[in-house]
Every structure is written in C-alpha cells, then in structure tokens.
Amino acid sequence: MLIAPLPEVAVARQPTRAERAAVRLLQIGCTAAVLVAATYREFDLDRFFVPKELVLHVTAAAIGFLLVGSVRSLAVTRVDLFLLGFLVVSAVSTALATNPWAALRALGISVSGVLVFWCARALREAGLARRVLFGAALAAVITAIACLLQAYGVRSDFFSLNRSPGGTLGNRNFVAHLVSFSLPVLLLTTLRAWRNLGFVIGASGTAIALWALILTRSRAAWLGMAVALLVLAVGALLSRPVRRDRRYLLRTALLMVFALGGVAGAVSLPNALKWRSESPYLETARGVVNYRDGSGRGRLLQYRNSLKLLGDYPVLGAGPGNWQVHYAEHAEANDPSLDRTEAGLTANPWPSSDWVAYVSERGLLGFGLLVLGGVGLVVAAWRRLRTARDSEEGLAAIACVAVVAATVTTGMFDAVLLLGWPTLLVWATLGALWSPETARGVSAPAALKMIVVLLLALGASAAAVRSLGSLSAMTIFVGDPSPERLEMAAKLDPGNYRVRIAAARNHRRGSEGRCRHAGAALRYFPNSASARSLARSCD
Image (cartoon, rainbow, N blue to C red; front, side, top):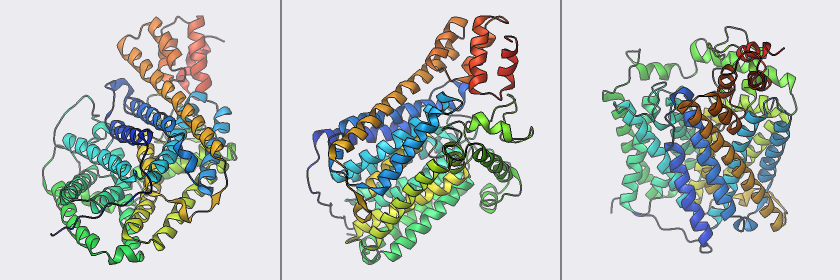
C-alpha cells in the first residue's frame, strides 16, 4: 500500500459513560461555536460574539459537571497553579472594575477556557484525545468552508459584509486566526489517520483551510502560520522517533501536494472579493511586518496608549474587559482606535492584541501568571518532544508547541483568546495534546481538585446565563424598541451601552427613567459624550 495505516494507540483503561458523553458534547460545542450567529445587524460584532460565547460557556459547564469525578486522577502541576492564580487575580480585578458587567463577561471567557483545558486533559487520560482533536480540526475546516462560500459569491444573513470573507465568524481576520492555530492539529490528525481514506479526507481539509487562509489576506495569521510551520519542521528534526518514521515522511510529502493545490486554487481561481490592489496576495506578503503606515501604525499607537493604563492600574489592571472603558482617557481625538460616531468610546471592545489587553486589564500580576502558565506548557511539551518514546508521542508534543506558538503570534496583533470560539478550540486542543509527565507535580487532594472544577463549572453556568440575557436583550432591541421592552432589555443585560442609551432617549428630559439609564451608561462608560449629555439634564 502507498500509505500504510497507522496503528491505534492502546489506552490504559476504558472511558466511562460520562467521559464518552463529555467528548461528544465537546465535539458538538466546537462545531456549534464556529457556526452559530444571530442576524441582528444593529449589533454587528455582538451578533457573532454573544451566541458563540454562549456555546463556549454551555459546553464548558456541561463537560465540567460530567467530568468532576474524572479530574481526581489528574496530576496537578505548576502550570495548573499558574492558571488558577490567573483566574483568582482576574476575579479580584473584576470586583474592582469600573464596568463590572464587561469585566464579568471577559472573566467568564477565561474561566470557561481554563475549565475546558482541564476537562480535555481528563479526556486525554481516558484515551479520548483523538476525538477531541478531531472535533477541533473539523471546526476549523467548517469555518474555512463557510469562508470560501462567501468568497465565491454565496450570500447569507449569517455572514457579515464587513471584513469579507468572514463567513460565520463575521470577519476575515478571525477566520484566518482560527485556521492558523488549528493548522498543527489538522496536520497531526491527518498524519495519524488510521486509514487511507481518513488521510485523504484530512489532507483535503488541510487544503481547504489553507485556501481560505490565503484568501483572507490576514497578515497576523500568515505570520502565525509561518511560525507554526517553523516549529513543526524544527520539532520533527529534533525528535528522533518522528525523524526516522518513514510512514510520516511519506504522508508529509503527499500532504504537501494537497496543500500546494489549496494555495494554487486560492491564487488562481476568480472570486467575488473586491480587492483594490492588482496583486493583493503579494502586497499582503510584502506588508506582513509593515508598521510605518496603515493599520500597522495604528496598532503601535494603540499599544502605546494602552500601556498607559498600566501606569494607572499596575498590579491588578483596569479590570477584564475594561480596556474599552478607559482607553479614551489616554487617546487623542484623531486616534484610529476611537469610535468616529460615538465620542469617548472605542471602535472595538478590545485592543488589537491579546497581550496588550491582558497586561492592561489584568495588570502585571495577572499577565505574569498567564505567561508563566504558557511557558510551563511549552517547556514541558518541548521536554516530551526530546524524550518521546515513539513517533506518536513526538508528534503530539510538536503540535502542542506549534499551537501555542501560532496562538501567541496571532494574539500579538489581534484578539484571539479574548473571544469565545478561539478560547474553546485552543484550550481543548492544548488539553488533549499536553502531557504533564515532564512538568513538576504538586500534591493536591482529590477532593480539592473536584471542588475547583465544580466551582469553575458553576462559574461557566453563570456566564452562560449572562450570555443568554445579552442575546435576549438584543432580540428585544431589534424586535420592539418600545420604552417598556427596553426596560426589560436593560434588566436582562444591564451593561449593554446601546440598550441603556436607547432606553434613556425614550424617556422625557429630566424623568426618573432617563436619569437612571443615562446614569448607568455614564457610570459604566465614564468617557462617553452621549451618556454625559443625557445625564446632564438630571443635574
């Protein structure tokens, strides 16, 4: 046979019924997270973000409750302590934040992400890592297909016309980021396919993902892909079992043929995208590290102003999700990060960098703990790579490092782990790939581990209720923006700026309702000119 099937890895024990149910829910969650969206164009960002965050929280809570018993056998490492410390610091920062509703939203994403990581580790211990990785890889391919459908002319209310082709993610950059950090998992699942048909399907999925990645013209994602491929290549050379396994070498060569076909299709076939440049892909490649003008220059200005928040809140930060609340205090009127239609507000609710957001919102303490956790993941995976007993173990370790590298790289230039669907996919992938065998262990009672997971599952449940309230408020706002209905929307989503402003404007000048809603909007967004103007009539 041209492509020899790879043997199935034996597992130490059979998974329980709860573990089988949890892995199915995780697979469904990964797919749902990249597909769900609302059609409320008045909420152009949140109509994508809120439904996907709801899927993240529901998935995390469900598998958390199912796997409470399974986590008893998990080895506790310093990485786990760093991540738990990051959550504790984030919770304290949330309690002190100017806008607690925005802080709770961002905190919920972090809580659900870490919970998914620990649950995926438990599934790995049960021998279900392949299924977790398959779910993540399938989600990446589905995202790429939706992107290609829009790129070649398909229209849908679930697509956004802005930043096309974003498919069901609403933004081409988000599609590109997802493909970038999912590429190592796609390659891993394809190379480790047990049957020839599985390899062909995986290779075709990889070609589709690369096709979409090229069409997005996302510089951050192209750079992330390059870093991931470099890590994969270096890791394969350093891992003796992988380097000497002829099956993987042959499959890699065939996989490259499929990949080149995807790239050729993206460049040569006509599409419905309207690029201004005659050579759009070459122009993007040349501008990958351009920070002298355009969006690159805007990012540098934003990073500089964002770090000024660290001077105001050095230890605990401004609060999760509160970058949007305080950024205008340090920005000039012509700053491209500011909203041109609403003075005192930012154009996006987060900065164009995960790491700028974490350091400004969680402070040096929270940011430092997260960095230590990430470094611990990479160091342990790299040690495992060097000491791998077989090619299966070596490939998993290489892919783990590559996923972290791609996530860190794309997160330097845009929001990744600040969003719901990348949080679900990245932490599920890392949990399924990472082995704590080479990390330093910490003694922890089984009961304590179960309590921590149970508390996080309860936190994810609370975050799901909050997301459901936000989605309901959006539905009310779009369907019937009468004063009575807006009152209900404000109760369902108290921190929604647009709902608060609309509710205030629906009351007469100086009325109790106008003052209450305008005061809330100004309290949560103290730099908003509209909120200040509405509240002025109450003085």
